[in-house]
Every structure is written in C-alpha cells, then in structure tokens.
Length: 368
Ligand code: FAD
Image (tube, rainbow, N blue to C red; front, side, top):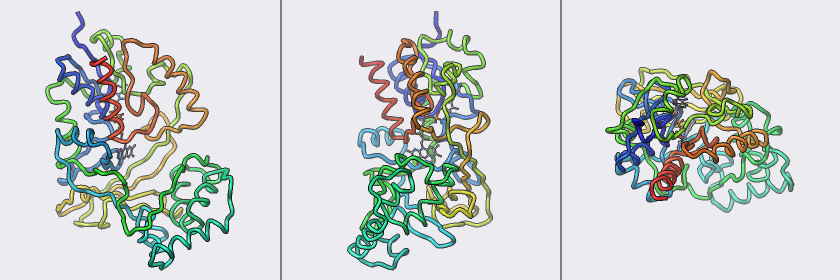
C-alpha cells in the first residue's frame, strides 16, 4: 500500500500550489525539498527585522485577476510599485525609459521633443536588418539610450559583447512618452505583507514537508512511497543527463547589514556602466516600506553557471532548446510523473506564470 498519493519534489511556487490544491481535494501529499528551507526562490530570510530576498528581488505582478485573487486569498499584498533607477557613471536615470529618463538624458520637456530625438537617432543609424543584440537595441531606441542604459549592463549580465549576443534576447524596448516610472504595465502588483514566506506557509499548511532532502540521493525509496511524482527539479538531472546538460546563467549575491536606516532611497538601483562589477543593488526594506534602524543591501553579480552555484536563467538558444526537446519528449511519455516549474520546463517563469501553470496542471490532474 502506497503511503502518499503525491510525492512533490521541490517546494517552490509550483510544488507548493500543486500540493495545496491536491491536499484540498483530499489527496495525501509529501513535499521534499533539498534546501534547508521551503519556498524555492521566493524564500526570504529575516535579518534585522527585514525580509531579505535570498535568491534575488521578487516583485509580484500580474494582469490576471484570477491569479491576483488567488494569492490574495492567502496573504494580503502591499502597494509596492517597482520603479527602479539606473546609475550610469554616477548619474541617475529613471526606468523604464520614459519622459523622466529623456529629460535627464537630453533636457527635453515634451513628448514631441523626446520622440523627435529618438527618431533622429534611429534614422541616423539606418539599421534595417539587426544581426545581433547591439543592432537590435540601436534600431529600437537609438545611440544615447543604448550606450548609457543597455549596452554595458547587458554585457555584464551575459558576460559577452552585445555584438555577439543574438538579437532575439531583446524583442521590444518599450519607450513611454509619459512621466511614469512604474516598471510593470500589469494591473496588479505588490509584495506580500509580512513577506513571501507567509504565502508559502499558508499554501503548505497541514502538508507533510521534509527539508534538506535531495530526491536523487535515495530516488527509489522516495518513488516507492507515492502513486505519482510531481517533479519541479532539473529535468536533465531527472534523466541522468542522458541527452546532455542544460545550461544556465547564474548570479552571486553579496549582502551586507549597514548602520544606516536608508542607504539608497529605493528598492532597486541598476548599475549600467562597465566599471561597476555588479548589475544592481537591492535595498530590501523598501519592498515593505520598512522603518527599521538598520538596512540590508545586496549587490548582484552575474556569473557563469557551474554545478556548484544556482541555475537561475535558462539559456534558450538553439543548442539548449534541442537538448530540452529531447527531455520533454521523454517526459511526455511518463504516466506517473508531472513535470512543472522553471527547472523541469527549462523556461523563465515569473511568479504569476508559474502559479498559473501549476493551476493548469491541477485542473488537468483532477478535472480531466
Ligand atoms: P523554484 O522556486 O526554483 O523551486 C524549485 C525547488 O525545487 C527549489 O526549492 C529546489 O531546491 C527544489 N529542488 C530541485 N531539485 C531538487 C531535488 N533533487 N530534490 C529536492 N528538491 C529539489 N518572478 C516574478 O514574478 N517577479 C520577480 O521580480 C522575479 N524576480 C526574479 C529574480 C531572480 C534573480 C530569479 C532567478 C527569478 C525571479 N522571478 C521573479 C521568478 C521566480 O523566482 C519564479 O517564477 C519561481 O520561483 C519559480 O518557482 P518554481 O517552483 O518553478 O521553482
């Protein structure tokens, strides 16, 4: 007799939402998590009373009212609005590219003047078939914005010259001719009041969870416990890397506690010049309008991925897409394993998307 209906490998948003919904339907679930805590990449650590986003800044945003209502049924969200700044060689610019940015860059005061400036710069370059990221970006926003706010930042992120990066990385570069620094266009955004751990705790309430347990250490034993497995780890690892390894970009985070109540006056400041080795500084208290005496900041350094650091961003180029397709074909033929989430599907998912995808998997599993 199998002890559980579902063994859920990984306690990120995909695993937690699936476990919650299965449990609600009377199914017995066991969640195993290889890290020492639950929540996957949305996990926060409390330092000096501040929720520190351990795996990078997480801002919830969505246009989907159902998803927004879903997360709000577990935890209330605050009114945080992401409005990052860029620091280029010591000068500050508002993001995303909008009238404030254009005023800071050129002194232009009206949308008409700003449009004219950008159009002139695009026309001057006369690129009609962008061959790489540099040409793509130049053809969309012109030279000044590209050079100060895109080029060196992107090169730090990817560790390669923009002329060697594929054009597809940048599909669109929205420029906004209003004085609006709200980064996301979505109708709903915010941060859970009390932090993301609260959301995860609510999702997993009443469900058996084991942390510090790697599925692959005693795979057979875990598999024998449950009728079905929900796998949210790396799909190539699930198949013993038989078709080759999927590649990622990684990040290194360097956090410090400062004896200051406000270090930079904003949650996110990007450093877009090549002289600064990190790509941004996060000041975590500002996500929740914190009034603590101290502050915690994190510098984010892009890194090559290896088997020792965290796989963060999938590299969806031709080579990796082909490898992934081979794994996906095998996954499709499994009848007792559900693959889901950013690592099993080898794609970048925002939080609202991964929740949506888990709810689709739930629907398929329980409503046919
Ligand atoms: P994960 O959260 O990675 O969960 C998978 C879990 O499985 C992990 O806890 C892992 O330890 C565990 N696991 C893996 N293998 C095993 C194993 N063998 N045994 C046991 N456990 C295992 N989204 C937004 O909407 N807004 C943002 O601002 C935002 N910022 C981001 C910033 C960064 C730097 C990154 C990397 C992502 C960001 N995201 C953001 C995306 C967000 O992190 C993801 O959508 C979400 O975390 C995906 O959830 P998941 O369950 O698929 O994966």
